[in-house]
Amino acid sequence: MAPDHAIETRDLRKSFGDVHAVDGVDLRVPTGSVLGLLGPNGAGKTTTVRILTTLLRPDSGEARVAGLDVVREQDALRSRIGLAGQYAAVDENLTGRENLEMVGRLYHLGGNVARRRAMELLAEFDLVEAEGRLVRTYSGGMRRRLDLGAALVARPPVLFLDEPTTGLDPRSRLALWGTIEKQVAGGTTVLLTTQYLDEADRLADSIAVIDHGRVIAEGTSDELKARVGGERLELTLEDSAQCGASIEVLAPMADERPTTENGVVIVPLRHRAGSIAEAVRRLDERGVAIDDIALRRPTLDDVFLTLTGHAAEEQEKEAAA
Ligand SMILES: Nc1ncnc2c1ncn2[C@@H]1O[C@H](COP(=O)(O)OP(=O)(O)O)[C@@H](O)[C@H]1O
Ligand SMILES: [Mg+2]
Image (spheres, rainbow, N blue to C red):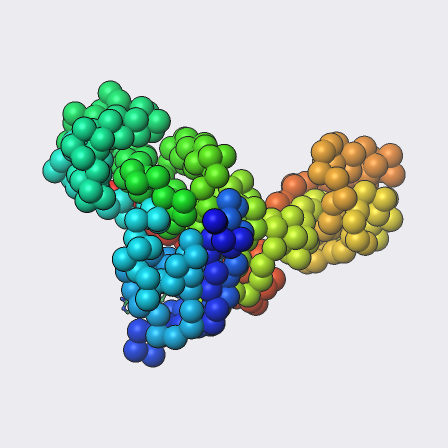
């Protein structure tokens, strides 16, 4: 019987010298759902994933995945999890098909079964045409798809994706999101790490924001956005003396009372649709001239700034391998 929670951790900790990479993490991921572990570089995402996939022993705390203890039952656990990530673990000097067959044999599938499974996955991940090419000739997006395929060879009920789209171009990102969604629709439990709110937004049922090894906020994407203030309109007026008047005029569109910050009028929006046009119309009727108007959605930086008081330092800069 499947446990209610496919992933459960209690006060998980791991340090490297003075660095508390994972500093007391509690997570509960209901079976069949997707948890987005959202945080900047160095937050402790990969360390958490490595502990949960038995690659690293925690210093203390407990973690169970698919009902199995990650330390005491690591051998049994390995066949029930898949891991794919930012650094695709496929062999450059083998073809796509060879890579998948090799993984199948590592899982003790017979030669025929391994071959059949490889072909299935190549088809699923749109790699049939490239199956006989060495992986070193693959694009970044193709490698990530192959890597994801490799993680799925043994049909694991729990899948870990460590920054699956970091470094990919927007089109490959979208394609990979679709692929991940298909897996989720098939009932796989997924823990996904990401630096991008939009990725967590699209894929995750719930999000845990992690910083300096700690979960600093949890909730659905809507709940987190609400904490950062949701979407807002930002307006600069030709005559800043009219800020007060514009606040009165725009207040009916707002969730909370509009404010001004350094001469910019900020309107927390109740509804996004048509808000620019409505604001322009309302201000026009009152003879208020607009210099600039923009719709701002909360970004990961806003989430971080609001929750931690510091910006999410550096975004990942490296290009697709
Ligand atoms: N093997 C290691 N040795 C020393 N420090 C490490 C090691 N792995 C991770 N760290 C440090 O632990 C912190 C968390 O790293 P990591 O889990 O990789 O973060 P993320 O995946 O969120 O970017 C960072 O400060 C990182 O430098
Ligand atoms: Mg990482």
